[in-house]
Amino acid sequence: MAVIKVKKTGQVIEGEDNVRAFLNSQGVLYEHWDITKLPEHLRDKYVLTDEEKEEILATFKDEIEDLAARRGYKTWDIVALSDATPNLEELLKKFEQVHIHTEDEVRAITAGHGIFIIKGDKETGYFDVELEAGDVISVPEGNPHYFTLMDDRQVVAVRLFIDPSGWVAHPYEEKEEVNS
Image (cartoon, rainbow, N blue to C red):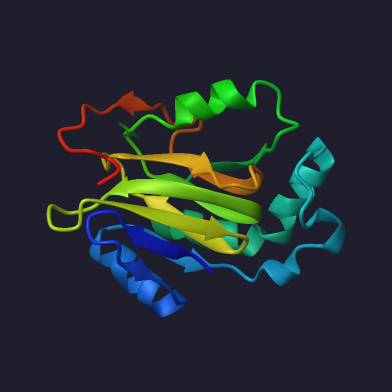
């Protein structure tokens, strides 16, 4: 289950209902999918063949199509990152810069962990959303954020897009400290 850490105050928010309510107050969609649907051989596997990626997408077909219908997403894929990923450090450096998109950034975590650092409203400031398998998040277009891996450095996620070519990150000029 996702855990939120508000940087300004040190507040920690746990529990599905509390996480959902907080993120909703910040304009961020949060859902939770039943990860037990995922076949055992795909749990905690971070180097995937194209066939295994398709199997993950097929497993969550109903959830993906429901979310896509509600939010206007047109295409989806799987991203898998781990220490086995070529050029992982370069990818993370690219990810770990505050940016915005012209469409939502959506992740449905199917294995491992990831963390979004998101700019909240003026009172809240930046907060971390630590995600694990089953967590689904949609950071709205234009909302400053970045995504990175947690200490285990491995994640598999479904990504959903409105534009079939995928989203493009646009740098965000920060006026406040991200870590406070």
